[in-house]
Length: 77
Image 1 (tube, helix red, strand yellow):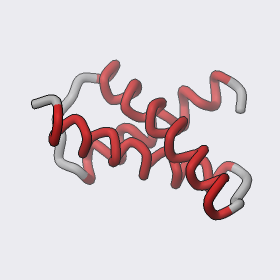
Image 2 (cartoon, helix red, strand yellow; image 1 turned 90 degrees about the vertical axis):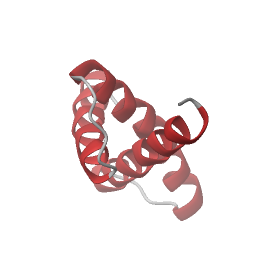
Image 3 (cartoon, helix red, strand yellow; image 1 turned 60 degrees about the vertical axis):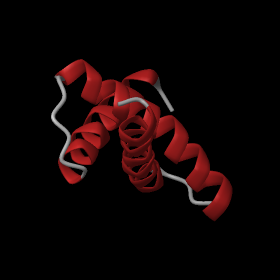
Image 4 (cartoon, helix red, strand yellow; image 1 turned 135 degrees about the horizontal axis):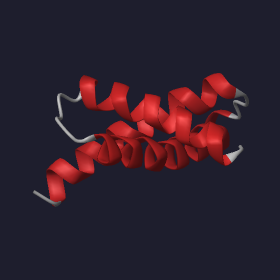
């Protein structure tokens, strides 16, 4: 996945995940959460469900970002 696409998908996924989880963060943190979620969730979905394409990457990015937010809330606050 090209870097620019990862940043765009990560930013959108981070924004969506922070709104779903009701977390208020600044823009760089939202993008970082989304990119981290894209890496975690995209890999997980591709390995577990054998899905490919942009839709699986976006869904995985949102789920991964939500997992990162949950971990951050649970263990680092």
